[in-house]
Length: 108
Length: 108
DNA sequence: GCGCCATGTTCTACATTGTAGAATACACGG
DNA sequence: CCGTGTATTCTACAATGTAGAACATGGCGC
Image 1 (tube, each protein chain N blue to C red):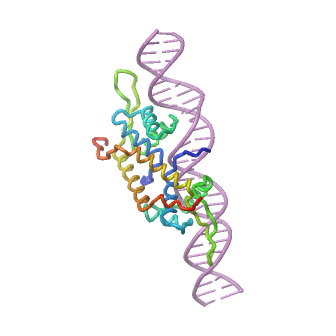
Image 2: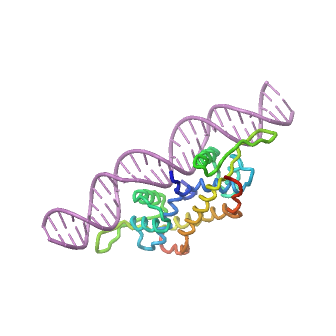
Image 3: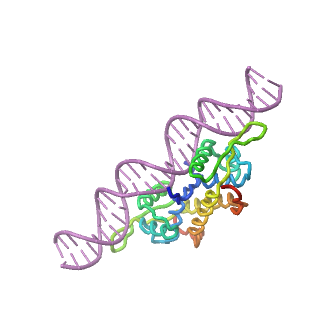
């Protein structure tokens, strides 16, 4: 379990959405954020399933919000999560280096 | 099948590896390329399975090489494939915009 | 020519990730 | 208290990712 496995596409989106919403990230807000930025509809089940898996891998951690009203399950990205994001980005940058998509010549 | 589904992590890597190796892309060379750039071992079955799926979605096309020696199954990225790559990149850039990983404060 | 080796591809089976939506919980306004 | 909007959990399944064995084929030494 020496988790060097690259992040999945959706895992990365969820991690980034948590960071984008700052200290107030919970299931529904993560969903909203991803939908706004990507323009795609996101099933709420997909979000929680991914959040659970990320927590199992210790890339996020969750806790109950204390606030006056109804308590929510809040999420934060861990250091390991931030590291995984950085690694995932670095690897992709390396793969993209030197690629020029304007070479889509005759390929139908 | 209005395929607006984002590319998977490995699908993107395979597509980029084909572009990187230019006109000479075939299964083994794609594997080699990915291993060199990412530093991770790649199972050959994973490459072909992904290549087959990308072909089914018309993001790559394949053909038998003619050459003197043994014939190979060559691959090329289609226009739709290049478009998918560009879209995938644009979406990720939008998600990353404004993120600063140096904010990994006290989160254990 | 034959057998062996290196290279390349296909196949089978399974693990992980991604998706969908129903079921459930719960505070609040009326 | 009952409906409503928000939030979470659960169940089931589809798509993607992984692993490695099996199979094919051409080059080469002998």
